[in-house]
Image (cartoon, rainbow, N blue to C red; front, side, top):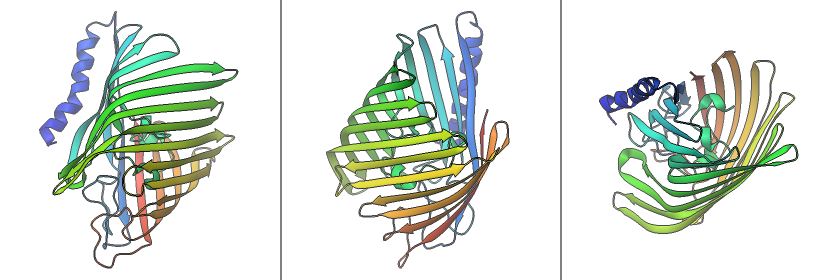
Length: 348
């Protein structure tokens, strides 16, 4: 999406806010945002380090495009049972320039304090951090584990979802059901990946500082990339995750399985850290096993230096099998590769 379209998307929330503000007695509007400004580099030019579906990545020269983004969200409360949400995200994704995506756009119907239904473009809730995977400030690490989150390139679903909360003693069980479809642009903008007839079920159990999640996604995936065409193929994705933030100890882990394409893939990671006031050092290890497997050891530091902003420093040691998840590899490329990142995450 070019600059004029990008600007229009960013100005849309302000226009909506102004329109609803004129009817303040029956509705309210909240405009918020988030972003990351980051520099990412590696110790080699034999391949590029990138996030999923990015057309280009980082080499020895620091680049902003791998981990930087800017998002704006509008939440408009129409009445006690209906609200509207829209979110636009600027990032490098698919094509080698910054573009704007409408990542969320849904109406939320509140049937009770425990039952909600959303219709439109909703999060594809198949990971621990699906609802906020693009919000760096909400995550400890600079980016979600590549070994797990690269398995599904979509992060939204066009359809509907249902959320039902139940109190079990002092604990909460949330059941999420969703159905819809999703389309994403492949790296380089030369093709599309389409997920149709997607059904999602999630169970999230929360007890104080502990969260346990189990999820399953079934659907049909098709790919059109240049001369390569994959007809609709049944696929599935299963994941279990755990997180804890207690007594300054932070732990997060997921194990996932993707099936239906080739031999499928398994992925997992575990991250742990300890908070010293506003400083949180952490370590993570992740591994993915498939035809292009890799593992990553990460050491990082998060410093909540400001009220609504955090500084992050992270070093990854990535060991790929073959090219792993690296893009544009040259002949003879091999790992391991060291990746460095300095980032500022913020919310407003």
